[in-house]
Image (cartoon, rainbow, N blue to C red; front, top):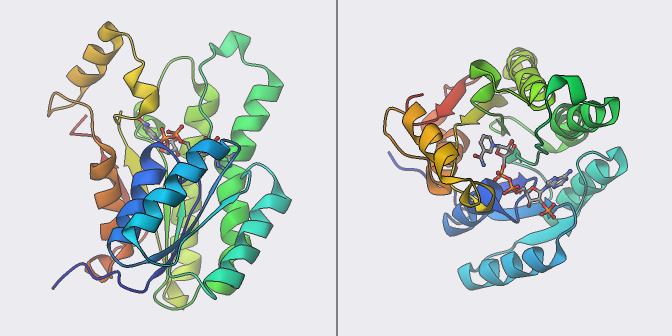
Length: 245
Ligand SMILES: NC(=O)c1ccc[n+]([C@@H]2O[C@H](COP(=O)([O-])OP(=O)(O)OC[C@H]3O[C@@H](n4cnc5c(N)ncnc54)[C@H](OP(=O)(O)O)[C@@H]3O)[C@@H](O)[C@H]2O)c1
């Protein structure tokens, strides 16, 4: 029994930084062909392309904003052109910001829901013709969907909505042999968390049973497991990668 992802056709949204980037490179290292997208940072995207070239294989990095339906549909069209079908669809891109509820504007609320919840729904709906028996959908949510977080009602609500989306898709797509799962990271070491003030970092570390933040490798490991045949009978699940909060 082994994790064999050789030749898998994988689409990952938001793959040029943080968790998404490690998911992309881990799939590439495992022998998959990957198409990923970013929202606007061309420099980082160019850096990822170089990294993928070193790993080897057939990979593509394109600009597509998951809050814009036409961009989502174009990303799926690129997947059709470059990969011909999708074995693993990873919805990872999301926006996060911090505003106390009293200051939360309609615009921020709407943009967050559009990017983090409508985006994944539109992605799955557009990609359905490219999915087939044995394909798997993995949605990156967040541990805060269950735990809550102050000054983030918009973000937490958007991530909680993904739990319902995944449960509904597991029931609806299961009969077609398509699995749908959610990975819920706790606080993970990324460029963003590197800038945390020391006291906030300590507080986050203390929340986890392991007494530390997680790594992008550890989240990528969970995603690759769910994409693989090792998880062939796992669907509708939320896999917390949070060090035991
Ligand atoms: N980091 C954590 O501690 C943590 C904890 C729990 C859950 N998560 C979840 O994990 C996922 C990844 O988070 P992260 O912290 O790794 O993110 P990140 O480091 O901020 O990277 C975000 C990536 O997504 C892209 N992106 C952002 N908005 C996009 C959009 N509208 N359309 C397409 N691409 C977009 C960015 O591209 P550009 O740079 O070009 O904008 C970048 O490649 C998110 O779903 C997040 O909610 C993260």
